[in-house]
Length: 252
Image 1 (cartoon, one colour):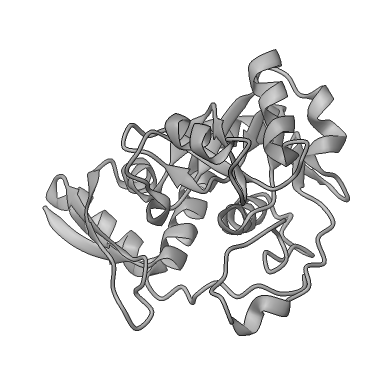
Image 2 (tube, rainbow, N blue to C red; image 1 turned 180 degrees about the vertical axis):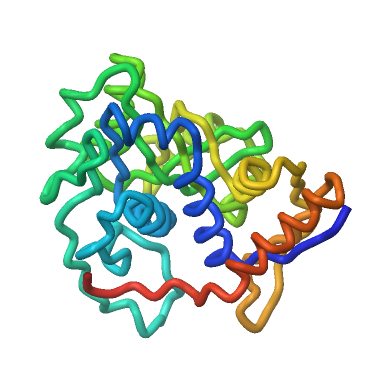
């Protein structure tokens, strides 16, 4: 067993690399529709997937989100987002100027939606904060997942873990007397740094500690267990993403 430190930005890059190699993603890129809904983690995912099919030109993850959480008083508080579309790929070809709302009614079994989250509970269930009075992209995606068996994968960093059941948290946040964002649990496969390491190295990964300062705020200590070859592969993989700079919002 060997321990590794991952910052949130390194974790986002790691998740992106792993999903680009995910068997389900590779299959849908050949013969189905993949929808990557805008979000900061999904920006890294989109970069890696688009690069894998030589469709990365013209894509920037800097404005690839509909909302972000930043510190009070941050210099980025006034950043303007030039958001225009999600990433929609049909049979390996990116469809420009499309959002989940444009294609959701055409999705069916075998297609895949990638949707980020704001919370992951101890049982591995995810939820997203909701600001849109109609439920936003999450509500649109759930219609396809529940109504037509579209697969949802939820790329989400371990820094978003919470201590309580997200269904219980949603009841609290959605109370008529509550203020602030609402919450919607997501019906999908949670994909964190742990799943990413396992998929790319066949090693077992566990979250064992977290936190830090001087740029390591939100960082996670990951314990990786496996053969010497698997540990070496994990070390090389994590080294490849370790110096990923912090996310900077801005125009596309």
